[in-house]
Image 1 (tube, rainbow, N blue to C red):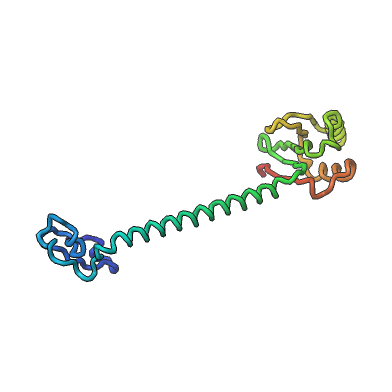
Image 2: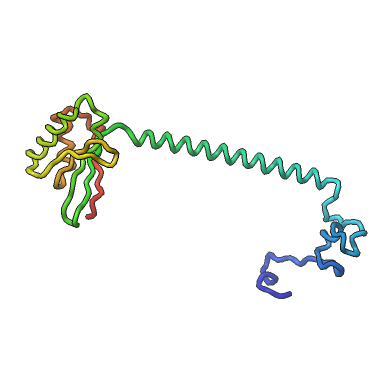
Length: 182
């Protein structure tokens, strides 16, 4: 039979049995073949070692599965460690765009610094920032049900400077993230 695969350079010719049309290696194991009574060729698997081979294959597959499971758990623990390092307790200033030109500055993460920013103090911070930048500013509940400050305008770096100077925050603990569509 000619096909695209028979013309392929890695294709090899296989001798088949005329009675059962199976390759000669399988002819010895086929009970319906008239040539099955002939001894298996030298390339065929010996029936005595068939069980040993299957046991070895099972052991190999189990060992491979155990290795794969060990690798997966190791990768998962490494990913969790990375996420923990990434999610440091910091104040995040996020800039998002609204209606293509308008920008909203969202300041979140005050719950990590409850000694510096209490609920009443957070309103004072919002009022101070609103007066400083002459913009609309409010304290709202965010997606995580924590208090956040929203300002109308692009004030990311200036808010970072004010938090560092006025409220004595460490500069590494204040992160500015720009998600605006410029």
